[in-house]
Image (cartoon, rainbow, N blue to C red; front, top):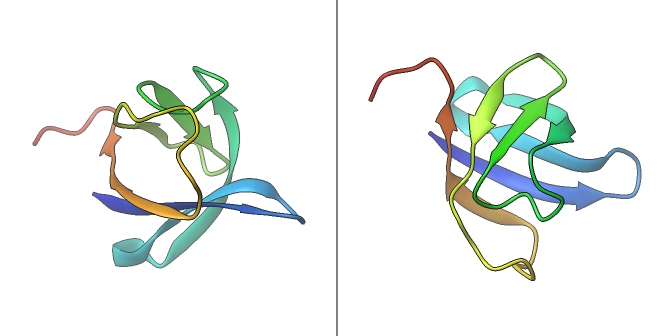
Length: 71
């Protein structure tokens, strides 16, 4: 699924899922740089993010995979 990741002064890192009209803060991540691991958002979803350079600029739209879903 396509998701947008951005940084805001209020909530820190957050994710927006356009097809679900869902915006949630990122509450946990496997790696400090986010990329190539999983993230957990406030509603409990765990998403796998693609590998990207640690200095990737935000906001960015990427393809993420929700854990537990089949393609």
